[in-house]
Length: 636
Image (cartoon, rainbow, N blue to C red; front, side):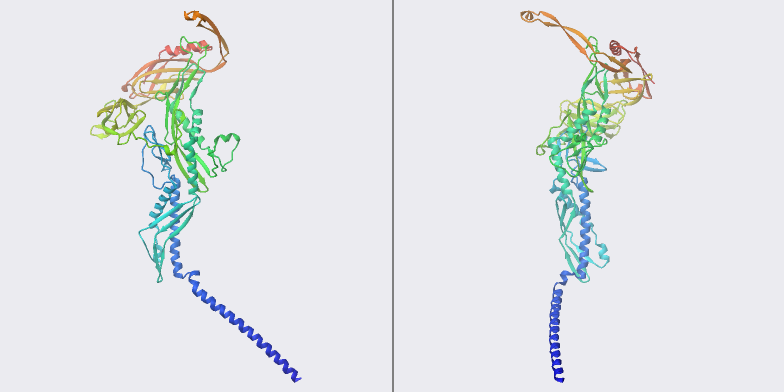
């Protein structure tokens, strides 16, 4: 028993010994791993886990990059708002002929035009390049670096020094703006010194993509003139261009009123214009007219803006002062067109105005302005960008070689301040304003040499003055401006009646549609005055066929000897309805001196009344009656 027991204990001892050896082996392996791990941590810990001192230096770097990012975002916003510019090109003023400088005024800012006409009608562009934008943004950031103050760190015990020299590189891509800044910053804290340089950062911004789309729109406009074509449609729908109306009285428009109508129509319609893309949906198929395709989809929102407050070149021909007039055909004595009177008209327009193009993506915008021009009722000539010439600046100091002196007075020989211009052909040069010189208002200026040029003077509250003058030699000139007086009209019309009143002089014209307009501006002068008094009517003129006969040469040998024969043919006048008829009026000459106008506020016009016409013959008689009847005038 005891033997058996002894063997059993030996086995247990042996088994116990093997177990201890295994455990020792495991412990050795663990120890080796611990030593290896400790060595690795010792070797690589500073790189994996920076020291407290290095963390503190990184705080400075993070602050600096946050400051730079903020400055960069500010620069991007300024650049996007100002058409790709932070620093604006040198200012170039416009003129009366082309009332545009090279800046577009918008919300108190000045945005450089990408395309415009100088004051001398010279086509110019100032579209920025992406490289130029990168340089301007880099300069903006470079100039802003020193405003990133480290004072809060210095209060905490940091010793921070930096170089005055700094250099910033900027790369603008479609969706990012990358910056690489060379600006050494030395940070010392807790006995450790760290050098921070260079500094790299990336701003998420679509300015590159927005600029690229802006460039596509601009290039297409310069080739196709799509803005001019849309604007021409707006003009022809809102102003008299070419046509006729069935009427036996003159047709009169006010140039200033037509301009207001066109301005309002441009403002309302251009903002509805869209470029082909996916940022909108059409209300109906008719709206396709307002969708323009530049050849590829623009998937950002694009808007076109014109404001009635923007400067505009607006001229119309023929015009007399503020009056656009078309006279009837068929009511003159001796002329008979089958009883038909009609008023043909044909007006030619010059129209120039700015359009602001804005491209939006999310919260980012990029905008740029350009001038749209319609010349003699047709779009300007399309121009390849490379062919746009600076041309000769007729009004530049280089060509202003002849000195002149201008003295400006009113008609009572009192000096008044006025703006002086010199016009040669279609170029108008602003010479400046007269200034006080003792008892005079005087301007000394130089003008280009020109044969049969024109001096033009303007002053608030006075009629414009102009006189032909050749500037081939030095000259002095006194100019006299006539004051304008507002005078109320009194025609004594009955209810349902209205009148067309015109005052024409050699150098001044004005017009009123009475009673809607009861006040008119006068200056002294000799006027031809005409009044047509109208009354609403509904006179239906039935279709008429009349026979007219002409003497025509006979054929053959007889025609050689001047023999003729009578040949007759029928002339048919279609049915028409007249909605107003002439019931009175007249025409006379009126001479007004300034003494007659001072202190007066009303002019009463007496006219002859005719029986209300019921037939075409009676209508013709009334029209003829206006031409031979006289007016009377009482000024009080």
